[in-house]
Image (spheres, rainbow, N blue to C red):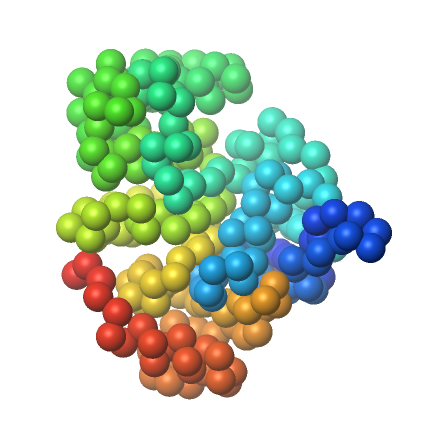
Length: 255
């Protein structure tokens, strides 16, 4: 049987020390297959983004086992890990350097990893996310929220990672723009055959993009299920059923 692309086993995380320690993740376990889009849902503070940050190397003091394509992840972050896993953050403005041009932002990972044909790769990536090469000379503040998120997606993909972590990629955008970004993400995933782990509050996003979903509450993964089972009220946990019921009246962009 093939190794899962992402394996999270007995993942625990605490902040603080000794009597002041506060545990935020409790024995989280799930796997994501090659080419799969796996969603994590749950209320704010449930630990969804914390799991992503452990995989991305932004938190390094976790306990348990993390692996990508069968290779265990170390607690420190290195070059190879950056080539393998990239993350798209919730706030497209806060994640882009305000004093760097879009060209500089996209070229920086190529410089760090000593990858050639930088001009060609930057232009190709801009076109891939629906922006012309004219955007290279612009600064983040000169772009709309949707355009900034397209740049953030381009930066994450320019190293051709195998795994993409997405933290609420549309929640900071206007409703009118959310559908455009979701459709772009769907097209890119199919083109690049990437494996995605996506955090979102919106079950409509899960239904549109994801194959399976994990439901988190209070730092624990309550259950994982196919999206079809989620949509047809076949969740086992009462908390999941409550999320589904609450989402039915929640306004969202058409996709």
